[in-house]
Picture 1 (spheres, rainbow, N blue to C red):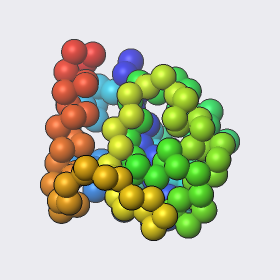
Picture 2 (tube, rainbow, N blue to C red):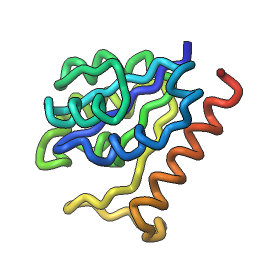
Picture 3 (cartoon, rainbow, N blue to C red):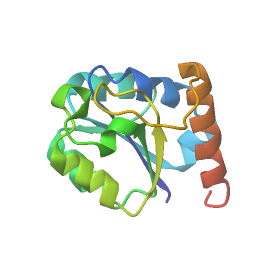
Picture 4 (spheres, rainbow, N blue to C red):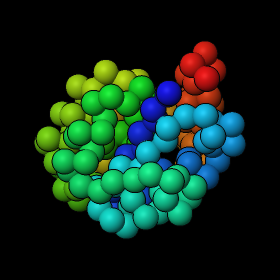
Length: 140
């Protein structure tokens, strides 16, 4: 079964917005898990429609190892982002995981990504959902 891991921190709002807009077919046919850096983030993703979730560094590091797709803000691969919630261990585990990463370019205070056009959060979420759908088409 296709495994998709959503990772978010702080209040979990970004991942929750993406989850809430996922196609119903995908929600029913894939194993989709919420991985929060804190309990608020995990709870927000569960409230958005996921049935399975875990919280904290160890849960994230363990769970991303066998995920086919990993979705979250770009900060999940940069140590010490999200006000320090992304530990070096989390960033390394996500970056090293074999699954495809769908990273949403949310600005980080100490990182600038050149070449990415500014767009609304709604437009970025729509692009992320489209890409997740494309990656899942052949596997479901």
